[in-house]
Each structure stands twice: as C-alpha cells, then as structure tokens.
Image (cartoon, rainbow, N blue to C red; front, side):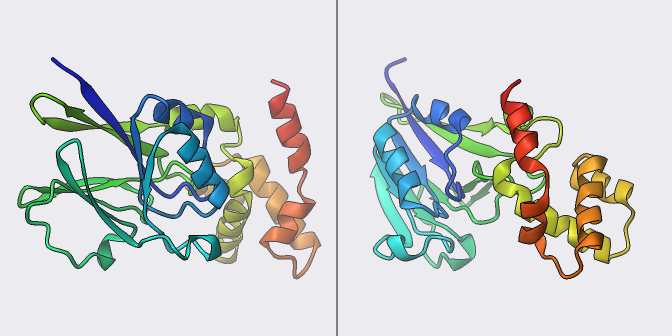
Length: 236
C-alpha cells in the first residue's frame, strides 16, 4: 500500500495541551492548528512534537501579533487553506482540497464543489458539554488518496475529569453558566441536568452566591472547596 502520511488537525486548544491529544500528535508527521492557541508555551509544546502550521485566532493576543491569520500551503500533494473563523474567509475554494477552520468548537465536515470545509472542533478546555475532538488526515503517498479520521476524546476526558464532569480549566465558565441559570429562575436539579454536572456542585455555587452578596464567578471559584476535590481525585 506504500507510505501513509499522517497530519494532525486541531483547533481551539486555549492554552491547554491534553495528554490524550499529545499521544495522537506523536503519531503524526505534521500538525495543523486552526487558531486560539492562546499561549506561546502551548505552541512551543506542539513544535517539540512535530512541525507546526498555525494561524492566529481571536484569542491569540500580544505574543501572536506576527502570526498570519490565513495560511495556504501544499502538504503531501494536498492544497490546504486555513483560517480561524470561516466567516472571515473570502477566498475562492476552487482548486483547494481542504479549507480548515476552528472558532465554533464544533466538529464539522461540509463539501462545497469538491472542496472540503473542515472544522476539527476543540480539544482544549471543554466548553460545557460539547465534545472534545480533533482529527488526523491520512494521505496515501503513492495514490494521493486521502481521508479524515475524526478523533473523539470526550469519553477519555470525562473519565479523567471525574464524577463532577468538571476540570480545573473550566470551573469559572461553569460557575458563570450556573449563575445565569439561577437568574433565570431555574431549580438546582434542572440546572444540574441542563449543564451536565452534579447537583452538589450546583448547590455549592448557589450557597456561596446567596451568602456572599455581590460575589462574581471568580469570587465563587476562589471560595469553593475545589482544591480538596482535585487533590482527592489525584489520589485515585
């Protein structure tokens, strides 16, 4: 069958390179990142694994000022374009094999007149209950045939996150979501079900909010018993 080239495609890591993601990257020759890396150190981690082609996302500030917002390249015979937000792409898809984008955190494949518009989703800090995904693009050296393998890491991430369904990186986001649900007048059990977290966690947020008038989401995170939670999890 000849050699098969493997290209990792990911986006929206938002400052976090998961162990599960790194394990996939280590099986690939090249890494494509569609933006919102957020930290130079994350990009450097990626570069230690394999050569990286990356574009700047809306969350890439300061350190990323010199990074291109759009990229066009040939890899193993494939004509590839990449941009963070598909809505900002004004190019002509004709003659392109792949248009890779990110931003939405949602995995998507859509073919338009022979060109595949492709979003690998997000494999960084989880945005509530969205899947944690990336992809591997495989190119057959002899024939030039190619295919995309979707990598869904959600189950592994949920096991690593433990029974609350939370990670340290998304606590503030989850607290903000709970506060929004509270202000809409929803009950604790309804909020837990809608956001996919334990009732006890929602109750703790509500209790702090009620007993500390004016506290914001970060203030609630600071007051929560989360350090003990993660220490307990690490011990198991």
